[in-house]
Amino acid sequence: MHFLYNQVAYLLEFLFRCITLFTHRPRKKFLKFVNNQRGLLKSITASERTKADDRPTLWVHASSLGEYNVAKPIVRQLHESGRWRVVLTVFSPSGLDYLKRYRQHAEAVYPMPLDTASNVRRFLDAVRPEKAVFIISEYWVNYLLELGKRQIPTYLISANITEHAPFMHWYGGLWRRALKSYTHFFVLNEASKKRLQQIGFDNVTVTGDPLFDNARKVAHTPYENAVIARFVNGRDVFIAGSIHDKKDLELVSTLANRHQDTRFIFVPHEISPENILRIKKRLLCHAERYSDCSADTDFSKTQVLIIDFMGALASIYRYARWAYVGGGFTPYLHSIIEATAYGLPVAYGPCVERKPTAQELAELGVGRIVETADELDEWFSGLKHDHNRLAKISTTAITYMQRHEGATEAIIQTISDYER
Image (cartoon, rainbow, N blue to C red; front, top):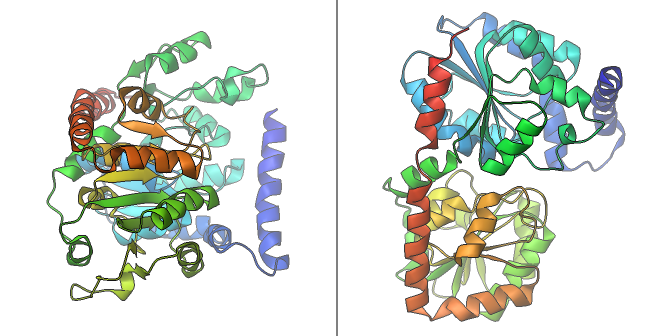
């Protein structure tokens, strides 16, 4: 099985390169990903060779900016302790661009090399991590096996172990072997702990999600944006955060078109000019791009403000009264915790199997799972002028957030205390 895994990994690496050569119109994001892989290990090796920092290296991998936000409070504290030199790897090209530009808690930010045996050896030889941290659902076989072989303490944070994970099935022996490299699993819930115990792992702690700590910190950190404040101008605003795909856009654009007396802020997951244009075409009302506006812009005829910069969504939620979070029509629902931190009622798509928080918030009445534009409209219309219900939801949401704080300290304590 390991031989087959390696062959597939090498084949994918080869195919990615061929696609960029022979496809006339590759997806821009995919092309960026492939381009980031070209000469990557040579670049990482050269960069690490010239570093002047002799502190031990903590390697943190997050597949995207959303996953990094889960780890952010942990990385921040470990970095600010002064003991660690932090190296961060990211898969997502957009997340990579942002984190390279604003790397407040990392000395180096790289794309993650593909999981081939040779890539893994070269990467670890160059970075030489003292410890490694992966976020949520990272089961890269070659990375884990090599980390175990080198006896490098390795941790999985904020894991939600589902029955669909490859190691939970008869064919998952290779992944179960790779999981033995994890020094400790920090999981979201008891169900995840029980599933790991079923396959022989007892090095598991239920800590919950560090994203609660990060979201609460962001919500309590002052943030002002003159353009958004000008657009809001004291009105109640609906925010559609991390609009992920055509289904998300269909729902929120239909809602905006039906409720032209309400102002909306759209925050697309992909901020390319093509995607911004696609959003504008779906709207019957006047919409403005954030980058085309200033604090003096006349928004009197503008119903929708489209945010075309990254990294501030968690702070922008403070301007809203209601929220929709995208990604819920895929397995990758984006963070609803960031909206909940402000006491907002929040709607999202139906694919919530990997998100226990989404299911819990729906049961509490704070969240709402919707599958159609009519369902989203029904939910919003019921809340729109019901101030008593909105106040009750806000209280429930804040209480829920407070109850789930504290994962960061528990995780940091375990990582810091463990010595090889």
